[in-house]
Image 1: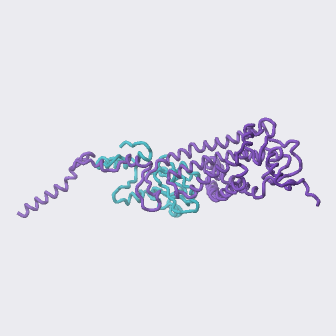
Image 2 (image 1 turned 90 degrees about the vertical axis):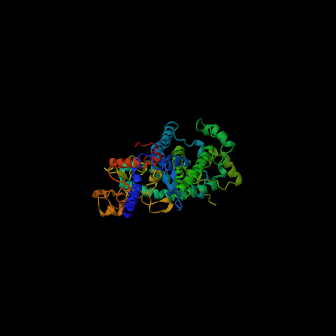
Image 3 (image 1 turned 60 degrees about the vertical axis):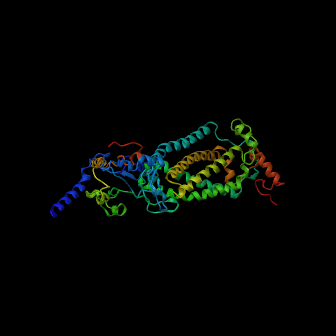
Length: 336
Length: 143
């Protein structure tokens, strides 16, 4: 009978369609007996393959493949937890050290026999230009860089969020743009000063005697004594690390993935504060720490007697180069 | 879903983030300097920088506001231009969840969502609950 067939067909269809609903709702039981969990993606297994969870990507923006990178929270812990302490201890520690030094040992004054009135050229115009260009860039880079870590803690409470944001915005531009003349200056410094900063035996003797700081004798030194050579190498090597990490930060994700960027930012920040601490010592000795030290980089000329006392080997070299020593001139020009 | 202890807010050098009473994490595009730290910190890559600048300047950061606008006055033109629609101020839920045809995206009261999620996990049994939670937070969540 047609109706009977239709009814049987209907019941069959109904039974089949109801079958999934009748299946028990517990995870491990299903009509086929297969465990659906086994087919699903296991988060742990995925995470074991790679330190972050990623998918597959075909567009050039490869960082878009990252679904989760838990290292972000670790970077936060470093940047907000460790970094302010490292920076504060490095910089304030150095300021404290210099303060203690100033109030105990005090300024290193010129001695009686270091005023001859005759001058010798110590730094050429180009050397002074290089130094001051690099130094000025460094100061601004340092302040704008420190703003990223300490600005919201120290400056924002004083001037409010709107003014602080404006300052931070311009600080960011200053930091990004002045990085380039800074790097150019470093290259110039290598060009003009590398030869004179190679360590030698004289430096070892100078260091062993504590640079003459403790005690009263003047030690033999070339154009640059060991202390100055240490400053040179700190600037060149520190500057090199800052430049490389800085360039990677200026072109984000061009060469590094997210974890690489986090690491390089950490390196940039830590080396920066150590560099700043070292430069504070250099600035101290070149300005306050030693009487007459500033003139070398300021006017380029230093007293000949002072030069003989502090850089005797260099004076000898210079005078040997020019047999009659034309660089050496007395105060007023001769009336010839 | 927005973070309770948002790493993006913690690392921002100009403190441009704030959390609303609904626990939505928002930020001010006026204060943002586009430094990119929030993207480094976010485990999910939520911050985006639609504009490109030289030397990685990035322009202002943009992210999901949970259809909750920004610091400007609710439902003002200024707010709409910068942050899009403020549906929460109108008493509505975020558009993505309202539109979602499969209800993969859910929005609303946290307890109710947790209940729905739990029922789904029991019924379908796919994988662990809250996929991705353990990777992001390094701790498990109990269902």
